[in-house]
Image (tube, rainbow, N blue to C red; front, side, top):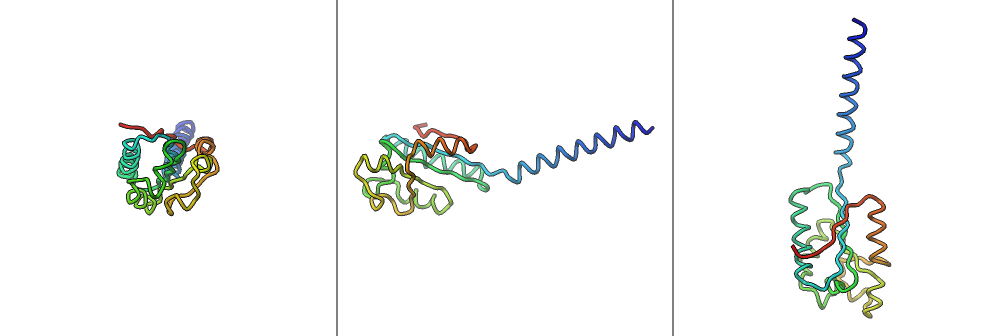
Length: 145
């Protein structure tokens, strides 16, 4: 009889522990996504905006996204060259971060005043992507669907 009680107690304890761990995972549950955008293809830019909006529909809460823009995509965040400023601004208000690579900005002769005011800058776009991945963020390469 004692064996059955101990066995039942261990089973219940294991079940409770498993339930607790599952709930603890869900409480943390923030989806962290780093998106790398480095193409001049404006359809990839629009696709990136669409992907973010679709992710927001599925995960409306506990979502952290950073779009790192470097290389040939830099015009995506340049005030006078982007056609998506309103979309980028709206997503920024939703907590999405857009980061321009300072190495790329220097290469193209751009200063921070050239970049959309609601975007941020990072010293190196590639290093930012790598750092986020090392911190456990999910990686998404921007492209055309």
